[in-house]
Length: 94
Image (cartoon, rainbow, N blue to C red; front, side, top):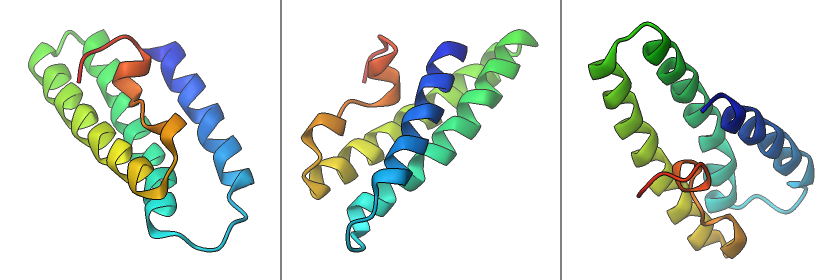
């Protein structure tokens, strides 16, 4: 998961730089969810390293939920290439 968070952080930064379009609710939501997903991913890594399997699983479920919300925001914004969620990009299931 650690390599995935680095990629996610890099892509989030790139999208923030590109977002010079007029304000769009779905685009803003899509970009804003990167922060929440990254924070939860870091907590998930820490839980895994600490052997806290129940907490790690709970965090995975929260990440999956936010990834679904992010995909929905991408769909509403017409960002078809961005509809793949974080967990899908890492090879996980939806």
